[in-house]
Length: 357
Image 1 (cartoon, rainbow, N blue to C red):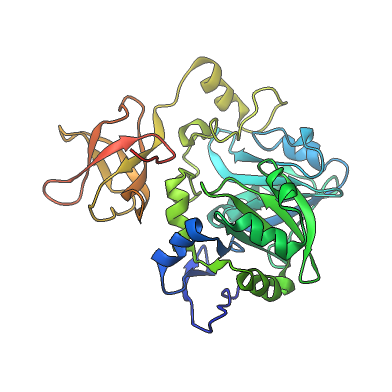
Image 2 (tube, rainbow, N blue to C red):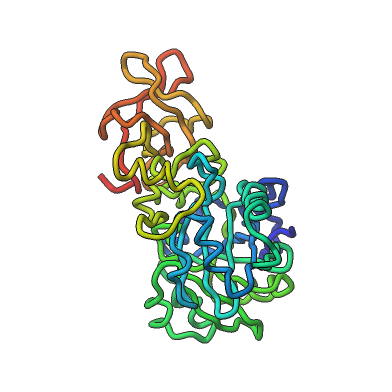
């Protein structure tokens, strides 16, 4: 996967996520983040995996594999869902987009292998044809206060049409003479759209949006905003040991309790109707402390471990923050210490998404 081009000719900083090259930043993370409020950011999200499912039974088959009701989707609409193991743990969290003649699914980069294995195990290709289109398609996110205006002008779409899109709903348009699918998504607090298109159109579409005023931004600035918005990332905040309700997936509208059966349903339904989970994903505000390491233990003031750190970042709005997995009995507002030095770094447990005090 190639890095995203910079109009100025500067070289972006490149890293690796799940074996794929990604752009981390363009030399000014603070400026990239600030563009969410002053304009819009443009972020290459192609490291996510994309799969196409075809045939009249595609929606029915996918509904039987995930936690949400794909069968109820009309073309142009979409949803968020989990694909689970038989024990109700999250193998992948996916976004589903119902197209006129197929279904497009995209998955986080670290969950691609698990999702692919699940599809191969449970979907008969003679009944539902499926294909990995991660190499032939790419996707870009544009987010911020001016995202709608920039995208509308670049794609020849009315601003009102973009504003009217429900989350995960999408429409077809053209940018620079190339066909694109534009989907509205809730990944960031700022207004956000993702654009899907053939891989060979990437350079032209990126340059057109950047020339229209969107600021190129890498995954580090994106991650700060994602953490602020309380959106878990598979492989960082949640994994194959996580139950959907632990990851706040009820609140994120990833679960239907009225649809038909699906793999892992018994565990999810039992928790919803008769029980509870023992831990939850929460926020931790750490003030001006250093950003904690991943999986650093969280301790009560008495020294008892009650959870651990997942994603963390230095937020220009909130200071040092982290997504943490903590036991359910720990109340909001509690002071917890991140184990690291002799005293531990104290922080306050808060609900997600992070909010101004």
